[in-house]
Length: 267
Image (cartoon, rainbow, N blue to C red; front, top):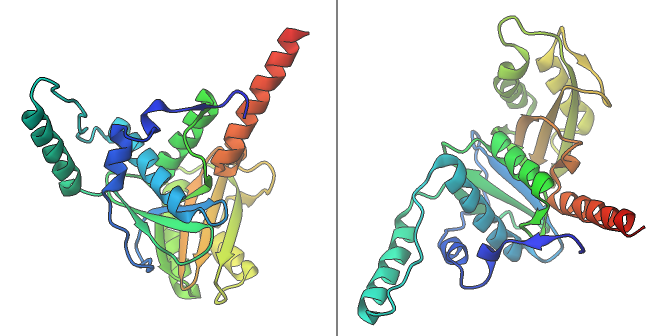
């Protein structure tokens, strides 16, 4: 699209592309107590989406968490030394602690990336979306929405209540907590245990007084993702401003802005 840019470092053969090749995909199980990021993508592009998000996530993690960066330098005067350096670099990538582990959910258009500390899925996804909105740099091609998950639990009423109390406490139950307006956004995929109303009622009860529901002018949005026998939750900010955390919509909005500015200048 007009006005969109692609990062040079994501071209084939770049160091980031090499780094992203080395990761292990976990089984299709999301266990209770897991933090991570759900992602949706265009149809039949799950593999490509996983690849580009691993590149993006690792790149952003290096900037935020100061992880060790693998240099991609060569010594043209010494072929043997160059090959040795390259082999050492590849082995270093394999040995690195994997902050992001893609989980194959065997579900069309949906992926999950398990995260490890120090990654905080909520602030991490917020930064990615905010950077995309501010820069207009197109960093993904197949990815649609990112949904951060602070923690997960088994999808039943009792465990959902416990999960809600844990995840919501820092946002709604702090000492000297001021009243907040909130909304709840549940999403269900391949899930039949709890219906939408059950989820909303349990989560709203966990929020409790003095907070009030406001579906249009909320201060905090509670994301609830139910997938098969697992349910995940997080509390997010700037959801509407950041196009509901949909990277493709963010890129399209920036492209439209650039096109409108160009037309205004031409006139």
